[in-house]
Image (cartoon, rainbow, N blue to C red; front, side, top):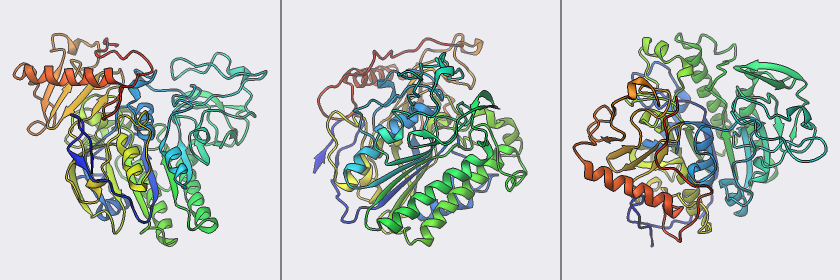
Length: 506
C-alpha cells in the first residue's frame, strides 16, 4: 500500500501495475463546454452521438476539472502534473510566438511514457510556447501580449529548426500548430520545421504570417487524419509497442470554421455546427481503432481545456434552449465552475467499468494515473500536484482526492475542499459578470464561499456565515503555494513568487 496524506488527497491508494500496458489516447477539445456533450444531459440541443458512444462504453466523470479557465495553463498542468501557477504564467495565455513554458528538464506525460517504451505522438494545438530561430543566431523574443508578434518577427528564420516544442518534451513526432488557430503564425509545423514558409499574410481573428496553402477550415480534419496515420503506422511497424497519442484539437475554439459538410447541420449556429464536427471527427478516430482491432487494448480519454467561450455566441445558443455550461455558472476564463468543470470520459474496455462517477478528478492527475498504470516511478521533484485516480477507474475506490485548485484568466484562485469551494475574488475573475474591476464588483465581498452540494450554480455566497471555513481553506491554499507542491514529499520551489490575491484588471 502507498499512502498519500494531504487535504488534497484521500486515504491510501492501491498500487496497480497493469499486466498488459494499454495504448493511451488523450483527446483534448478546445473551448468545449460541459453541456456541449449530449451524454451530459438529455435536453442538449447539440447531438454528439460519437462522444455519447464513448461515454456509454466508458466512465464519465461529472466532477472533472482543468487547472484554469483558459487553455495554456490547463495544457501545462495536464502534461506535467504540476500547477501552472508555479511557473512564470500567472495570468492569461501564451501567444503563437511565445517562448516555451515547459522547462527543459520538466518531465511530461510523453517523456514518462517514452521512458517506459511507448511510442509518442502529438497532433494538433500545442500552445505551450516554442522558440523560433532568427537569422544570425538566437530566437524570436516574446511578443508580450498574446495578440502581438515579436518585435524581431522579421528576422525569424522560418526554414530553421524550432526548439522547445513537443519533440523536445518527450514526443517522437509532432504535427500541428503552435497555438490557437486564431494566433499567428498560421502554418503547419512537422516536428521541428514549418511545412511551408509563411510568406503570406492572413487573418483569422488576428492577422499575421501564414503559409500560402494553410487554411483554417482544414485544420480539424487534418489533425485527426495525422493522429489516425500515426496509430496505423505504429500498428503496422511495431504492433507489440504501446503508443501514446496526445490529440489537442483546435475546435470548437475560434475561428469557428466548420467544413461545408457541417455548415448549417445543427440548425442552431456555426458553433453548434463545429461541435457536431468535433463529434464526427472524434468518431473517425474511434472507428479507426475499431477497424484496426485496437479498441480493447486502448485507453481513450476525451476532455476539454476549459469551458465554452463567449465567442460561441452564448445568447444564440440559449435562445435555442442549449446551455453550454449545463447548470454551472460562468464560462471560459472564469473562476466559476463553467470555466473549469469540463467533459471528462475514460474508456478502457474490459478494465474500466462503464458508468458515471462523481469522484473529484483533474487533468493534472493524468501523470500520476498513467505512471501507476504502467508501473513507472515519477521523481519526487516532478508531477508535484498529481494524484492517481487509477483506483477509481478500476473500481477499487470511489474517490481519489478531496480538493483541487483552479484559476481564472486573471489569476484569481479557487480551491475545493469536498463540497466547499472558495474563490479569492469578488466576481468571476474572468469574462462573465461581475468582471474584474467592473462596477458590478463594487461593494461585493472580497471572497466567495459556496456549498456545491446545495448550490451547484454558485449563487449564494456563504463567506459571512462560515468565516472559519474561509480561514481554513485560504490557509491551506497558502500552504500549498509555499510548499511548492500539494502531494507528500519534500518542499519544492515555485519558479516565481506567487501572489495569493490578484489585483483586479479591467
